[in-house]
Image (tube, rainbow, N blue to C red; front, side, top):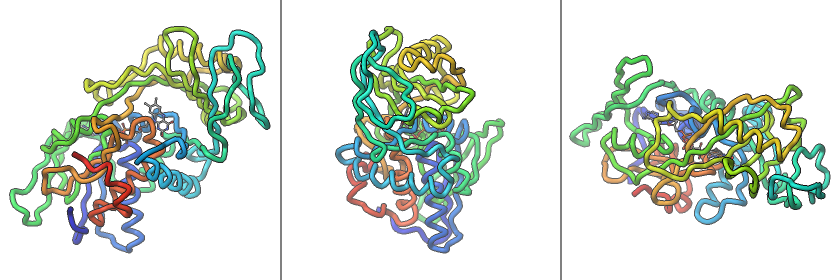
Length: 380
Ligand SMILES: Cc1cc2nc3c(=O)[nH]c(=O)nc-3n(C[C@H](O)[C@H](O)[C@H](O)COP(=O)(O)OP(=O)(O)OC[C@H]3O[C@@H](n4cnc5c(N)ncnc54)[C@H](O)[C@@H]3O)c2cc1C
């Protein structure tokens, strides 16, 4: 295991999603807390901050739904979300308590649709009675794009839009830094000296690792589509319910989920299954046909959504690792201080802050604060 860092710490983080920006944030806040000013952080992203899943996700947070080895990560991360809400302001990042319900949709006949009480204005109707599966006490939500941009800003890290093309590693362990070649979006090539590298490129992490001359378990992506619907009043007039549906309607829609958020009604669906063969982040998009099918399906669940406008239609990949769980820690088989944080699947917004914090501890201390929590996720 690498030792705590002495001297200047120059960290390049490849991938500015929730994991990369959280790592940058906690590197800077831990350095401040220790009163040291020798930590410099650069975020490198080939598209921009929150350009992929971290800017396009639903933002539902519910630690009690996350079981097994990842549960303690989720519990820690939920606390960090509450801290972010205090620091950045709830309305800035769209943080609010949320509930989750399940039900069968679309509705075919008029039925009593809810077992819920105290719902200010229920906007949905389902075929069988709606079951509350997470309460306002258990769950919350954020607007991921807003959150990740705030985290990046607060980290104070430099942001370079570009992609690494090579990492030059010194031949001997003589204290010389690594040098990363970066091709910027503007077409120029720059070189950055660094003592530590963090790979946080979601489903592209194993590709980035191989560009940097190291190897980690293969990463996959599962493409899912989503739309955001707006009304003129502000969707926060609707109660903060996230609906996880058993969809029995039109066949060109599947995996339908509706999240009433402060910025509108987020609707996701049509997940395509995990694949290694993923598009580069700048090429990921949805189609007008899928957007229209999702909007119609959403309207059949919440008739008032028929009057809403389509504010955004997009797609993004869930990052999946072949180990079947998170991959967090030092990249194996290299003496360089290169770390990875990926494989966050459908819970990356929930767990990203804790993963970023663990990576910051790896860089500054050589190991995370509670190593036993992170042991199951050591990269292979
Ligand atoms: C439809 C959908 C809904 C979701 N809803 C939720 C939810 O409600 N709650 C929840 O907790 N999670 C949710 N998730 C999961 C969550 O969005 C992801 O797990 C999380 O965003 C992954 O974050 P990341 O930082 O690992 O990767 P990403 O967000 O994928 O970021 C990776 C970054 O790396 C950059 N990159 C890639 N290649 C390179 C390169 N060569 N050089 C430089 N940069 C590069 C990309 O541009 C990108 O910005 C959802 C996901 C999807 C797809």
